[in-house]
Each structure stands twice: as C-alpha cells, then as structure tokens.
Amino acid sequence: MTVIVDLFVRREIGKVVYRMLITNWIEQLGKYFHFLGMAFSKPDKWRISGRRLLTELDTLGVGSLGIVSIISLFVGAVMTIQSALNLDNPFIPKYMCAYVAREAILLEFSATIVCLILAGKVGSNIASEIGTMRITEQIDALDIMGVNSVSYLAAPKIMAMVIGVPILVMYSIGIAMIGGWLSGIMTGLLSTEDFVQGIHFSFKPFYIIYSLIKATFFGFFISSIAAYCGYYAKGSSLEVGRASTRAVVASSITILTFNVLITQIL
Amino acid sequence: MITAKGITKSFDGCLRMNGVDCEFGTGMTNLIIGKSGSGKTVMLKSLVGLYEVDSGEIMYDGRCLQKMNKYERKELHKEIGMLFQGSALFDSLTVEENVRFPLDMFTNDTYKQRSERAHFCLQRVNLDASCYKLYPTQISGGMQKRVAIARAIALNPKYLFCDEPNSGLDPVTSAVIDDLIAEITKENGITTIINTHDMNSVMTLGEHIVFIDNGVKCWEGTRDEILTAQNERLELFLAPAKRARFGN
Image 1 (cartoon, rainbow over the protein chains, first blue to last red):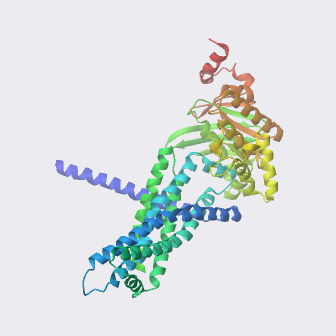
Image 2 (cartoon, each protein chain N blue to C red):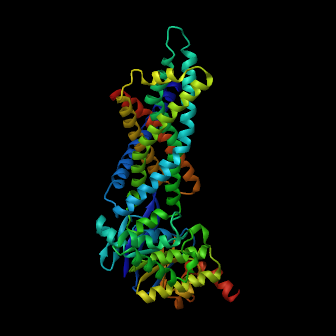
Image 3 (cartoon, chains in turn purple, orange):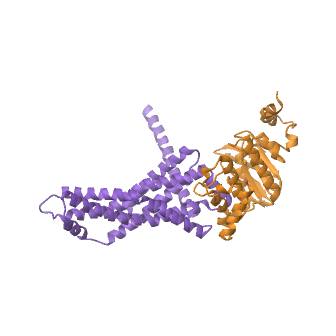
C-alpha cells in the first residue's frame, strides 16, 4: 500500500515538475521571440543605430581578436602535434597530419569551439552590460523617453555579432593554421612542404562556406540570448551575475544543439 | 493635468496599489508622500506607463493612457521627463551627451543647435562647464541629479516625474534640487509629480500633497494643511518629523 501511495505521489510530483518546466520553457521561448520582434522593429534613428553598430563591432569584434588569436594559435599547434604523433605510421604520408589538422580546424574548432569561447567572453559582457542598465533604471529611462530600448540596445549588438563572428572565425582558421605550421617545424614533426601539401590536399571550398554559415548562426544566438537574459534581469546586482551565467549556459547549449542540426542539414 | 481614476496594481497576487484616485494640477508641484514600501514608486511608475495597471484609468489632459496604441504612447513619452531615484544616467555617455541624447533621438536639429540646447539645460541646472566632458561616474551624486534634471527638461516636457529626487543627498544639496524643480515647474508651466518622504521637501514644494499608505490614498491637501490634518496614519507618518521640528 505504501509503495502504491509513494508511486502515486511521485508520479503527481513528476507531472507538476514536468508541467512547470514545459510551461516555463514555452513562456521563455515566446518572450524570446517577442524580444527579437522588438529588436528588429524600425529603429528610432538609423544614423544613431549605424553609429552604435560600428561601436559594437569595435567592442565585441575587434575586442575579441586577442583571445581568439591566442586560443587559435595554441589549439592549431596542439592539433598538428597530436595528429603527427597519432599518425606515426610508415604507410601514412606525413602531409596527412596537416590534412587532419586542417579538417578539424575548418569544420569544428574555428566555427564551434571559438563560438563557445565567444559565448563566454562576449555573451557575459552583453548580459552584464544590459543587466546593469536594467537594475540601474537606465532602460526605464530609455522607455520613458519613448525610445525603443530593445532596438536601441540589442539590435546593434546582434548585428555586430552576425557580421563580426564569421570574420573572427576566418581569422581564427588562419591563425590556427599558422600555429599548426609553427609547431610542425619547431618540433621537427613536419616540414613546411609537408604542411603546405597537407592543407592543399583534397580541399573543398564548401567547408569554408559551411564554417561561415555556422558562425553566422552562432553569432546570432550568442548575442540575442545574452541580450535577452540581460534585458529581463531584475532585482539586485546579484541578478546581473545570474543573468550572465544564464546567458553563457543557454547560448552554449544552443550552439551545441544547432551544431548538430546544421551539420546534419549541410 | 494628470488624473488617476481607481488605479489598482498587484505583483504576483500581492496588491500594491488599491483603487487610488487623484488629480495632479498643471504648473504646480504635486507630491506623493508615504513611508518606504507604501507604494509611491509603484504609483509613479504606473502613472508614466512603466507598469501596466490592473484596473483604472490614467488621463493626460483628457488622453487615456490605457487606450493609447504603441505610437500614441511613444508620442506621449516625448512629453514626459523623468528624474529617477539613482539618476539613471547612461554610463557610456558623457554629461553633455546624456543631456543631448533625447535631442539626438527625437529632433532633426543640427548638431550645433542640439549642443546649444544641451548647454542651455546644463547651465539652467547650474552645472559648471568643466563637467560637460566628464562621465557620470566622475561627478558627485548631487551633480548627477542636476544632469538628470537637465536631461529630463531637454525636450521641454509637459510633465515632469521625480522619484525621490533627494535620496542620498545632503540637506544643502537637497534644498538646491528642490528649488531647481520648483523653479523649472513654474517657468515652463509643467505638471510635476514628485515622490518623496523627505519632510523638508514636503514643506518647500508641497503645493498639492497626496499621502499613500499600503497602496491606499489616505489623505490629500497642501503643505499648510498637512501639519494640522486629522488623519491617524498621516499623523503616525509625520510624528518623527514633528518631534524633530517642535520637540516632544
């Protein structure tokens, strides 16, 4: 009898939790699309939005060059060394190491991993900036003036990331290749000729387009999710921290999910 | 004139404002007073449309806020200036850019005209020109309030809302801010509504006072009537101020 009651109670609790989770998720999704609708409504002044777009490109795009360079250089180097060590076989030509490193960098590292890193750096930056504006009533001040605060704050950031992330990804590919080449010649595992032959071997230009498509989507998700989390932050400064964490977690999960979907579609 | 008719507002089932009716006259300083947590800020934010009321009507010179569409509300907001409790200046803009911001957004004036207007507003609030290029974090709290007033009046608003304009300020600076609000109200014939629990402000500015307690309007009158008013809740609220002024 106790077991039956226990099972019944657990099932009921399960139903309630399930309902709450699903309802909350659908509500958040609806709010997110409404937010996007407001973000892409006509701006109050095109000139000011254009100026803000340039500022955001500088802050979010150019400001991320440093971290992207360092990570790409070292990951490119490690990938080449790992490939060279694991493909140490007389039947496998040396240039295959560079080929393997190129494929990994082009298809996954530069598009997905760099975007995950950007989700941490840029995502938390956007969420905390907008979240702080929310709790210090700066967003209320914009609304009171009759300014579309979502369009004014979020749209330039989203556009800057949609434009900037594909450029950063291309840059990351280049730096990772340089890292791979440097590590190959410095460790003596690969010669320059082997490396160049490897990165030319069986090259499909579509992989670049594939990387760019992924980068564009990921740039959009990172910025829009972060802006959304920051915009709806409420309460104290503690909530700004929570909003940043939520933004990074949500955009990382979205990137990983869409990575699977886009890979399957393309 | 701004009229509130039976406005009610609740958050998560908790009633914060219950059927408040009041009228705020043009060209005068109207005060909403009450202890902390009594619903003053909820009322002010409901009046400007930052919170949607659950029931009741808010009329701006005969125009009902609740019946306005998105564009009409936007036009109304251009007629509103608001001074927030924490000033709410934009951190990324300089003092001058903060004041010029509404002009940049909503006027087609030349840069020179907009700058002149911004300088005029900053001079009006007696802010030294050496501060114009500084960022809000580089100036004092009193100066920030003055910049916020300058920004609020940049577009020549018809309605001015001030949420606790004296919070965090010393008595001398508070008096300066109070005088400034009173002067601007008279000069421009603005309908000004101020949220405060500072009795000095009440006695200086209170041409029309609404006392709110637990989200209910308990008393309405002028500064001449407030000290002799026969209202139990108001007397409780005023007791510390009376003790300080007249002793036991």
